[in-house]
Image (tube, rainbow, N blue to C red; front, side, top):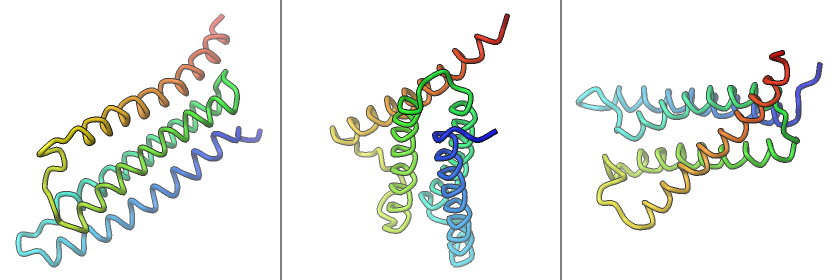
Length: 144
């Protein structure tokens, strides 16, 4: 059985994000070893953890997309929206880790940050919900 295109894209993305997470772990380790306190910058740590979690979340979306009732186009759009926000979040954490410019990107809050977070919430939750709903609808047809 061949994987659906959306599942293929999701698994490739999951693999790339996972490798990114592993490289962030190397950065984190190097930062810990150089630090007088034995800790990496908070956003290096956050980037590493987020990338690990997002890689597995993306793999989970691949499974849902593989067995979805929705069209490839619907699943692909939903997946791309989610991936844009996953990758954007990790990149943002990396930027703060490189700059060492803050320990809390949400303070002080700005209107643009609030708008970005609302978009992230809608994009990640909405895109994931679309893919999950397609999976549920397809599987519900087998519950007879």
